[in-house]
Image 1 (tube, each protein chain N blue to C red):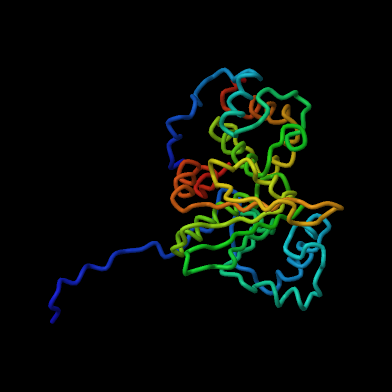
Image 2 (image 1 turned 60 degrees about the vertical axis):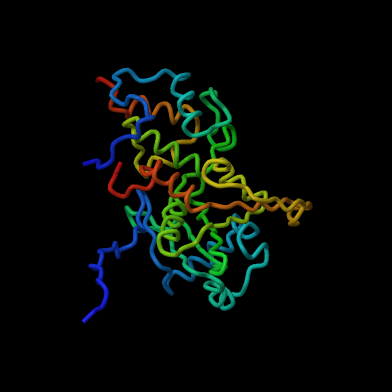
Length: 201
Length: 97
């Protein structure tokens, strides 16, 4: 017999929201490795993505694909399942409740916002699933232009490491931006139509 | 069935007359946070107006709010400012044929 009042168990949403308006996130599977190797080493991504110009061997690539990664998903088209990119949360710091986020876009779908939509769905998933305070984005200057318009309303630029990274004959800045949980969830709520999977065009 | 009401700050999507070029782009510039308020028709969205992927998402959201949603297969064809306006005018439900 209990000596305290046992609370009634509460219901929870057990199936995470991994679907947006145009995209669906799904776990990376072994058959995706070749696609991801190609994607990471394509000329458009070779310098901008994590390998910074030094393509690894396919074996080394497979070994590092999940190194330091908390969660990552392939971003796919809801309509036909085609992969359009990758979203990844890495270097989780549970002591300080921080994590880093990275997006990789298939150049064939560049400038169409597919992976950005996947990134927003993914950030919501990360905040829903772990008790992080902030998601950090680290970006070289030449990549930052891909999402710079979000500064001040979607994310905050917390720092800029000047002349940090060498590329194309010169040094470039590195931007450090953060999405705070409260501000992001408020932004996400206001822009729910961006990712609402119940809406179809 | 759409399960979400438009946010209160949105404009009137029941308007029968489509907005003119200037009014449309003023609205886009405000909602999508563009640097250019009234682009030239042939101006490229990315290289000319500076639309980044995040702004592309917001632009697609706005067009859907204007009842001119863009099907996936048409998104790559929105290259210039004129492409966007043409889509808005011809695909929006405000058009009376």
